[in-house]
Amino acid sequence: MCEKSTMTSVIESVNLQYKQKKFPTMLTDFDEMPAIKLGEYTLTFELDPLGPVGQGVAERELRETPERQKKATEELRTLLKEEKDLVLPLDNDGWLIRFLRPCKYYPESARDLVKNYYGFKVKHKELYCGLVPSKEANIFKHNIITVFPNRDQLGRRILLLELGKRWKHKEVNLDEVFKGCVLFMEAAMVEPETQVNGAVVIFDMDGLSLGQTWQFTPPFAKRIVDWLQESVPLRVKGIHIINQPKLFNIVFALFKPFLKEKLRNRIYFHGSDRDSLHNHISPKCLPPAYGGTIEMTRVTGDQWYQLLLKCDQEFRAINSYGYKEVISN
Image (cartoon, rainbow, N blue to C red):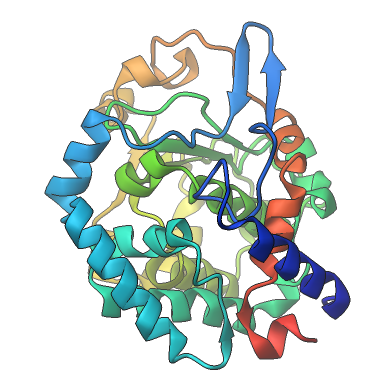
C-alpha cells in the first residue's frame, strides 16, 4: 500500500522546485546531475537540450517547432485540467513535452497517452505502488538488464535483456524483470535526445531453457504488449530478437495475438545472423559479442543500479502523480 503522507510531502517538495530547476525534464531538482565514475568514463543521464541533429529529427519526424511546442503545451495543459481524477504536475512544461513528442504534438493524442499511462498503473498497481530503485536491487544485481552507455547510429538508446544463460528464473521472476524495464524506461523518458530519437531493445535469448519458457504466461504477455503499445510515452523503434533457439517460438506465440501491426512490424528475428542485426544497428555501436567494433567496457546492471539509486527521490516524485484512487491509498 502506498504511503499517503510520504506522497503528499513529495508533491509539496516538487511543486516548490518548478520555477528554478536546473534539469527541467525532471520532476525533482539536484545540485548536480547524479553520476558515477567508471574508470575514465562517467555514467550519467543526458539532460542537455537537443543538439542540431536532434532538433532536425524533432522537426522532421515529430512536427516540433518552438511555436508548435508552446501552443501544444498550453493546449495539453488545458485538456488535462479537465481530468479531475488525475493529480498531475501541470506546471512542468518538460513533463508535458515528454508526452507530446511521441504523439507528434497532437494535444488530444497526448492527453489520451497520459490517461493510458496512468490507467495502466491503476490496472497493475500491485507492481507500481512504491516502485523505486532502492526496492528492486535483485533484478539489477543479476545483471540481465542493462543499457549500453553509447547510443546507436540514429541516436537511440539501446536496452539489452539477456533472458537465456544469465537468467536464473528461480531467483528472479518475470515481474521483477518487468519492474526493472519500467525503471529504465522512466529514466530514459527524462532525456530529450531519447524522447526524440527513441530506443531499441535487444533480447538475447541464447541458452533459453524449457524451464524458463514455462515462466511466460498469456497474462504476462498481454501486460507487456499493452504497456509497449498503449502506455509508454517513449518511441520504441525496434525490438531485436537474437540467438533465439526453437523454444522461443513457444514464447512468441503467447505475445503474437496481442500485437498490433505497428509494433509487430518493428520486431525482428536475427538468430545468430549478425549481418541481419547490423542492418538495423550499426556494428560501430555494438560490442564484439554482437559482431560490433566498439571496445567500451560493458556497463553492468549493478552499475546502472548505483546510478538509479541516486535518483530514488525522482522515482518517488513520479509515483506521487496519477489517479487519485491509487496515490491516496
